[in-house]
Image (cartoon, rainbow, N blue to C red; front, side, top):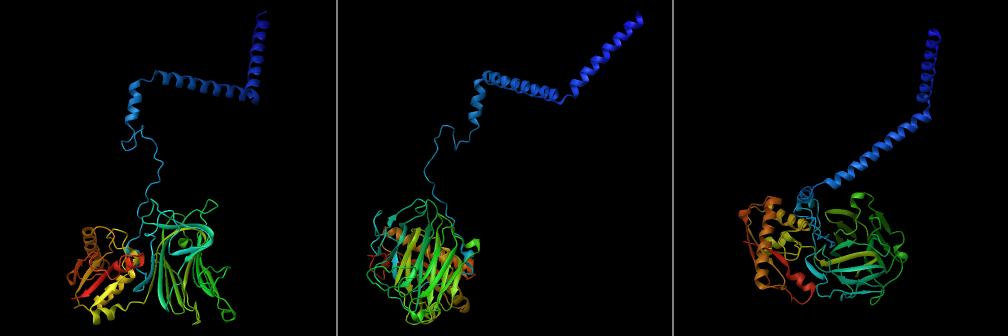
Length: 426
């Protein structure tokens, strides 16, 4: 009986062990148990979290509020107004290879200051639409267009063999809700009082365009039998030169007989030595078309200044190539080419001393203009010292404000003539 009982007990242990091992080795049972443990753990955590929140004292909530920075308190509503863009103008030194020197005599200038906001600008014509606008991102007034048509200078321009042209431009969203690009055209028109259609309008032309994705390119053409084989096209495929939406660019064109050079900011993008080899080609109109952009400070000037001869023989240089923003005294980097010419003359003639005199137009109060002209002259001296190494002892500065105009202050072009910097030999 004892032996039989012992066998029975051993049998029970054996079958219990086998049953247990079978359950452990059963993958399905194993996964079910593991899943149940995970669910139980998460449930416990959720319950604990609920009780923790209910039991959290009020003082602890106050401490959290105290940790919010003062400049952005928790109670302050979100500001939906578009912030003013910071000035990202590059320094003068970034223009160290910039050799553009603007023409001496301004024959066309438009910053749209004489136009009312919402109006079409008075000095232009169109077969589409455009309007004068202001923006909190950039100062001044701008001609805003979004069209597949054209906006052109209404009176024809009497341009000689040598002249310069400049403008500020900002690519913006077009009709499709994204940057659309734009096209600027310098052309010889056929219809003096209307527009010329076609992809190559007028008798001849030079166009600079920016595609919707930012790539800049150009096209030169001469219509008629004499122009066959003289057309040119090209692009700047380097992405560092691609333009972007809502950024301001300064475009400058320098025409010297057959040669055309185009700059964007501090970079020379295209240099075409034989763009217009025919003497019959004579540009007379500016057009903006096929895109969406804001344009301002359109400036055309003739006569490349012979600065060296004027200073050494006539005793004075009148410079229109030193730029400032409205009511500011900081020399803009686009002034590098003109300052470089002045510095070269002073370096080659170490005994020459000069007085730098600033002049303004008549906009604003007399006293403010007088102070502004003096500060601008001082800034020019500072740049000649710091950027070009000219001895400060060789230069005096003064400002005469609006007291000595060279033209009536009755139009944007005449006001541009009055805004100047003079270098007088002592």
